[in-house]
Length: 253
Image (cartoon, rainbow, N blue to C red):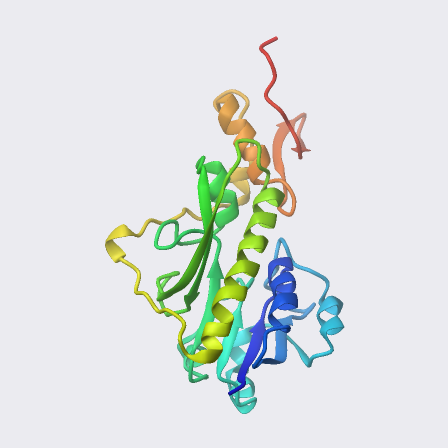
C-alpha cells in the first residue's frame, strides 16, 4: 500500500523535513501547497516560494488553504501533512481526506498550546521543550498525539538555536512515525485536557525593552527570543527604534 499525501507548508521547518519525507518507502507526496506572494498571511520564518519547486513536485500557491479543500479532495490522497502554517483550518478541510491532517507543534503538548511557541519558550524561561506530532483538530493544538521528541533549552540559546533543535526533532519524528503511518500502526493518544497550559499571544509591543522596568534577565531573554528569524527586540531612543540582535550579560560596571 502506498500512502498518498499532500504537503502544506510555507516555512523553513516544513521545507527541511520534506527532504526527509520524500525518501520514505511507500509514502508519496503528490503535491505541495504553499503561500503565494499575494497572500496576506506572512511567515516570519518563511522561505522563497521558488524553493518549493526544487522538489520537482506540483506546487500550488494559495492565498488561503481553506479555499482549496475541493482541489485537494480531487487529488485522491489519504492524508494531509501540515508543518509551518499560520492559517486556522476549517472543518471542511479537516475532513477532506480519510486520515485527516497531521501537524507539528514545537512544544510538548498538552503543555504550552497556542501561539509563538519558540518566542514564548525563551521568554518564559523554559529549560526543556520539544516537538509534538499530532492529528490536527478543530480545537487549539488539542488533537491526538502520535509522538514527541524533547530537547534542552540552553541559557544562552537564541531563537535560531531553538529552531535548529526543532527541525532536528521533526526529522526524528518523521523517521520513526511516518513508516508506521504507512503501515497503519501509528499511535493515537488523546491529550489530557487537565494537563493543558497555554502560551499567550504576542504583539510587537512585547519586543520592546523597557530599560527602567525590565530586569537584566528579562532583557536578555527578550533579545534571544525575538532574534532572527523574528523582528528583533528593541529600545527607543530619541524617537528612533534601535534593534538589538545579540547580547551577553557581563560583570557589573
